[in-house]
Image 1 (cartoon, rainbow, N blue to C red):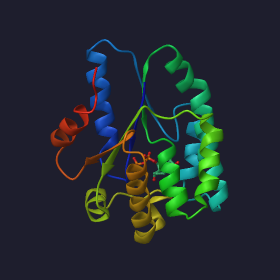
Image 2 (image 1 turned 60 degrees about the horizontal axis):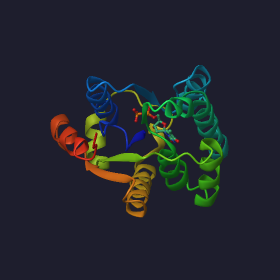
Image 3 (image 1 turned 90 degrees about the vertical axis):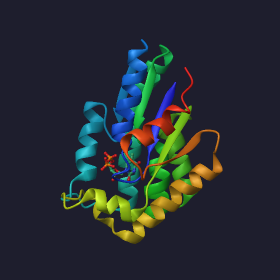
Length: 198
Ligand code: TYD
């Protein structure tokens, strides 16, 4: 079972992923907690390039680096884990590429879809939690901490990213559950746990 967590910065997906992992582990399931980009040595190295403010990347280079990191993670960790019947929880997956590179950078959505297919070999999450947060709230939570290269993209970019996640969720309501992430950790957790039937 592959469960992914999506949303803009500050939505709390990393915290919620941890809570779901703890719950599943406490019930005796084997759980792999991963993040994108990352999760393997190669993908973590690509992550460094992608997030470094020193990297001068055009939009297609950026897209292909995210997909390269994804392909490496899918083939070396995710698929073998799923084949064993383990749970895989992933902090971001291809919906982030659709939202950030598709809606945010405005790369043709058909191109994005094809690249996502190539990188995942057609693998789709069984369940995706989209932790919905307004841009205003995201900025409030970010405070004054230093921004990475992508976070420096500006308000209009992030408004398009939010629209992207909203449309993804509207198009695939069976897979993508919208979770109101504006409340506290426990409120969000309760909403998420309602969707996990084990
Ligand atoms: P992440 O580690 O989730 O950052 P944060 O915890 O601050 O949300 O993700 C790294 C950044 O990469 C984040 O700004 C979103 C971006 N990203 C994309 O633009 N496209 C993608 O396909 C993925 C997976 C992430």
